[in-house]
Length: 145
Image (cartoon, rainbow, N blue to C red):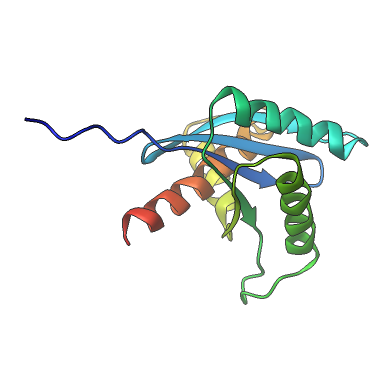
């Protein structure tokens, strides 16, 4: 007799930036780039767009990238990411966690360069790729426990 199947964990990774917010979807233990939200002057509208994805994909956990400095200390970007996570948490019942995202954009940029994407195309996708790198790190850290 086989064991009952556990439901597959669906996660949403968020790479917050000042102009764009990268989103990645995780299904089970694999994260993939999803889309980019171009930031507007309407934070609540931007966040409602993200909540729509949370609902549509039946996300169980949201992971927001925390851009700490190389020394591990939070700066202005980390405070902004924390604020975004707090605002998002008020709009959904899904748990919202923070995860260190140091160097994810650098890693994403490097992989896109190696893939041969020109500067314009890299700019269009780097945020969602960085979100996937960050979310994969979070997923990997969970499986290591």
